[in-house]
Image (cartoon, rainbow, N blue to C red; front, side):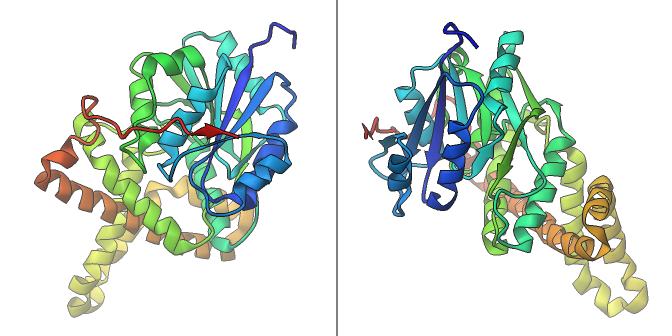
Length: 346
């Protein structure tokens, strides 16, 4: 690294993640790439997140009230001076060489608009079996998508400032799917890759109700974009996995029909369940190798609920899409975004 190496602005949006924020910031302060300015954008936290950042000597910019991660990222970019922007969520800890690798990849290929990290299959902090499920599931789905993508993995990603200025800010209307929208916009002009060369650990959801609520909302909110594009994003969400989610919902829905038919009727939900499992058979084999048959049983039960929840969210989104013209226009570029206050630096 030389004095001519580009300045990297690391932007950490945060809302009430004081518990993991210190791990995130210390990981960034330990990077092998040294030309870094570190900015925490606190999005109206009510915990001691700001004090955590101050104690570590990190600059803090605050929104006037909780505005969502899209607005927080935009605010961080407005205060950033770097030629490279690195966005890292406050529940993610990057490996020491993450920024150095990302800068090198962007420098080697000017056609790249963004590079995204793959999280380890182990969570940053072990809270529960649900979190261990989510870390394994998320890792497998991302690792199997490594390479060119159109689905932005924004929890840890790097992009040239010039690209951000050209593509424009994150859409602040979107609280659940801003990364899908941004990836779609970015890949109209640039390439984007997901790579295991940039590694990190994520403090995943550790309570099942919260995870299911988030997945339901995300599934519902994706419908207008995918209906317009008429295809899935490249990476993570595939037609095969969508089919697996629908089959899981069909298995659950078939139970009331099957009960009056006795043993013969049991074939209906059993067949749908088999289709759901087959859609992600590689993932189940991966979990079996890593954790054994007992954990696989638990993993399979939770993943069935996840699949049902995703499919239910998509079904709700499809119904809303049919009934609401405003919902159909959710991703229209001409709709005004909510204004994001510049906030104040601390």
